[in-house]
Amino acid sequence: MDRLIYTAMTGAIHTMTQQATTAHNLANVSTTGYRAEVDSFRAVPVYGDGLPTRAFVLDSTTGADFTPGPIHRTGRDLDVAVQGSGWIAVQLENGEEAYTRHGNLQVSPNGLLMTTQGGATVKGEGGTISLPPDSRVAIGKDGTVSMIPNDPRVTAVTIVGRIKLVNPPPEQLKKGLDGLFRLKEGKEAPVDPKVVLVEGALEGSNVNVVHEMVNMISLARQFDMQMKILDSAQQNSQRASEFMVYNS
Image (tube, rainbow, N blue to C red):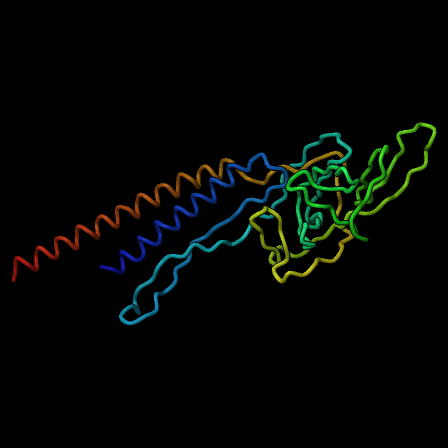
């Protein structure tokens, strides 16, 4: 009897975890460059004295869905979207390198190119990218950042840096609580010249609303089924106890 309880109890617990993941995905339908999180169930045996035949359910987070999201034109000079596979490298306050698809950029009061999400510093191939004042920014398809003076008498275009664009294998990436991706081994990914940016555009979330809503309904039904199994186990145990007392 307790074999049934092990499976149903742990299954119900992790079904609630999957529901939380689905709700999180739905809450980020409009988040620029968001990658949907993916969970899955797997059975794990219980080890210990008297428990060789027991098993419980474990929720295994398989990572994220790396399918590209839709690209929307904005016409803003500091908006870029990664076309196809690839990532924009950013540098965190602790010096750690991370990766994002959120190409909604801004210039900080100190003249540094940064992301609007979390305020991470955009990393260039030669370090951080500093931008002089009173100039218009232009970002090329290869990540080249150029400055165009606002003075119409000055026509010279100055290249100030190049955004570090990388494309590590998806299986080497892990998602942090801040929504940024990092290499699992803590290393830094090399520059990939094949990564291309779309100027004046942003990539939308890759969350499929219909799929997530259907998944939410399915998980709710699974939870109800597991609760019914626990109720049945309790009733069977109670009847077995009554039978033992009656026959004694």
